[in-house]
Length: 315
Image (cartoon, one colour):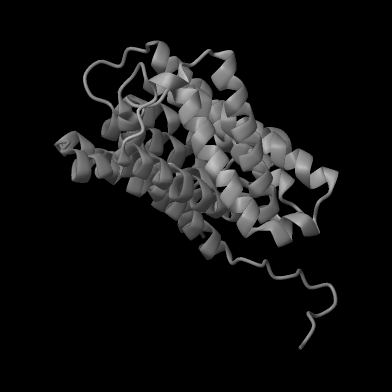
């Protein structure tokens, strides 16, 4: 085995391209959850749904990752994992309750606004200012998500407002994951994160006085909950946390924003929604936004060595 040259930076365990692919895969999996969540809310109260979903995910991840979890059973890992869990609970709690008072399209669009928030939240923590292309890409992405997910008037109701609150929590969670994962096992953090979400969801279930006797457990509901717990929680959060650790926050936010258009696409394929010209324009804008964010454009150059970007012809 050869060693790295003295002074050379160690290679990351996961290449940047693979980390970005993890984020995209997580977004597509989460996109498939919108119409499933909406249908399942007809059978289960919102906090009870989250409690069952994340309890199952916590049990699966703790069992599958126990060697890694037990190997780093330290307060700094446990506490940070539980903090991440509290942020996820804030996001999902607001989003899920909001979904009972808004449409899946509005829910998807307003959740997706965290892609605009993340670079600025990261700026507050890391002091690294978002580049001009990141700002432009975020604006394009926001407009594209709106075209895909919204129809009719743009009025904000209670469910929409709650969904926006959830988006703030999701944005903070992305930045916090990037900070907390440095020097720590990201898989162990993910397992403790699920424990935190599950515990807070059970507390919220009883504090809100949800009627558990009204829950309807049909085979379809059981199947939906299994998919939400295993694919949309265990697998997707592992992918997101790995991606967040090894990719930059701006790229992470924009790739995860694919959750909204993919949510509409799955609704078209499996719930019979009609794909309009407006939706197609939205897909195009989001694709352009990702290209703007991910590619190095020859007409964008940096000034002064301070990370600024300007739209000037390259020399």
